[in-house]
Image 1 (tube, one colour):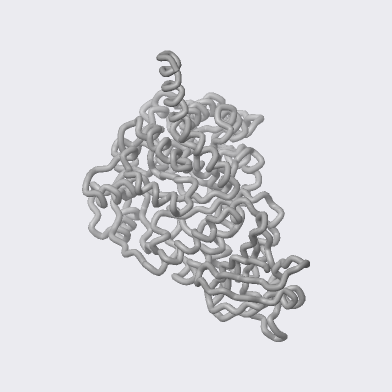
Image 2: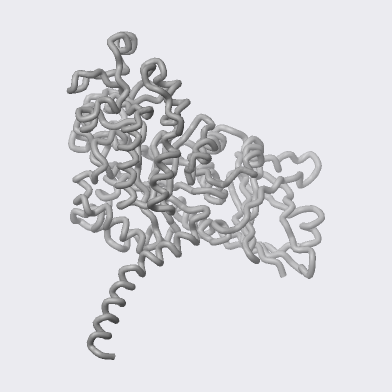
Length: 524
């Protein structure tokens, strides 16, 4: 090899080194993409916790590699860092003065002070990294660090509103819902006077009072739509996907129902905003993920418009308030729908699972959502059994003891649900039957199987306060099966069953209240 060839060889080696991590990321991501695991963390609290752990200030790009090893070990595919964008000074002032919020701060952090309060992460001042988290370029570095480990970075996108002191309120007041004198007279709480002399509306969910630290964007404005798309096209450079806040509020029909009387002079666009936005982004990055926070039964509509995954609040509510039989009926009715739901038992909007459900029930609810086909969302602190819900304005959290038993349970659960069978396999709901005449406790059992290649996993949950017995028609190969071996990955107990009995009568199951079997099933 001569000198010129050697130089070219070195150049090629460096080029391949630069692309190796990216290639590995997409390879790993394609393997886990069907039903990924997402971990949500408040960016400010995460960095503070890591800084305290290492006794030095840590910025986003400087998070030690072993911290990402922890996420990777858990089988996390997507990391959603909530609250990375620049916070609004006006929102912070309002957060400090709001009496209801002050009570929430006191509940969560009794010794809170003004230094512990920031503006709401959903009253965005600018889609630029919050300076307290690091330098602007650190988002791209963070994305690269995650991608090297086969994980993707998810950030927030808020299409409905911006902070009241966002630069657009001055430079482009025509991009906002504006109120006439009569509108302001009839609904004074809906509007605020901007620096340009216009009365602009606050962002609003029609079922609740307005968010007074926000300004309502006019999604009917073509220029505004383009401006939002431009923001998304910037975000794709530093993230692998977006979690879209209250995504249904920008649907034409919802926007019309909310603001129709105020914007009578604006014609309704022919297309939905999401149709345009998702198309523009996917043309640049076809792998970019769109995740919708959505309610009111509009999940399917947003999936039709191009969202990869949509919140499933219905299942959360059923797990919290309904009977096992009602949960089964819901799963059965939804079984033929595309598995593009986001399942969760807690997030930053909901109370801590251990508080909302109770300790044992919360673990069974987590077992259910972690083993259904869809995107499985886990919230920072969930694996440790944390009790305290933190208002999004707090940038310091209280000490909350780790529950070692809950942590051990989640280690087992994630070890089970991280198996490729539960990501690439086929899911099938099972109907329990009576163990014997007169015993109705089988109705409290929820069960399903996963099958991939030659691997079968069986999930059985007693989602009730009482012991439950039942029989389940677990699929068994017809030919040459001498025995069935079931290893419970929660307890490490092995059960041997006769295949003829399972075929004819079903697999007998007896579970204590709020207990589960996570079976690895093999046939001999």
